[in-house]
Amino acid sequence: MGNENNLPQLIMYADLANLPELNLPQDISIRSLGDGDDKIWVDIMRIAFNAEYNFDDYMKNDSAYKPERILFACVDGVPVASASAWYRERYEANTGYLHMVGALPEYKGRKLGYLVSLAAMIKMKKDGYTRVVLQTDDFRLPAIKTYIDLGFEIDFNTHSSIPERWEKIKNILSEYKK
Image (cartoon, rainbow, N blue to C red; front, side, top):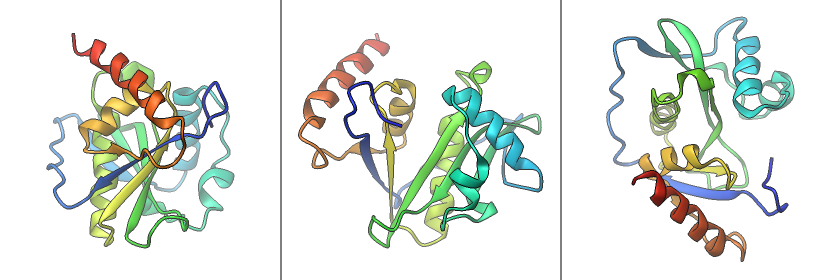
């Protein structure tokens, strides 16, 4: 994925040292991928991103694949959001990769993206990672706000367009708070 100008995705980093506690509302639980959940993952991502995904191509055939790295946020036991505690070889060995974060739109406002991402970050920390990186698109403003709330900061060194793009994003996000 990219953005409308074919510019590279934004890259954001966070430290895993001082993560907040994962306090789940009573009706929300977190669990990892189980048998048959690949179809649920595909449905969540298709709806969240309005695009088609093949589980084998995006997840199972990736060298980082382990079922326990793919997490679901469930409302009353039904999976409605997902994030993965992944890694990418191009990043430092101590750096995990927050991968494929998506939630069903009818659950907007429940902070499911935050909760499932935090659960993935906690998993990465337990697995020995000290930092986490993610890639996102400029137009994914609710996701960017969630990532900032989780302690992520923008990497300005990846492309010359980043400072100007980030300034626009910050201005739009500041309007959300009013």
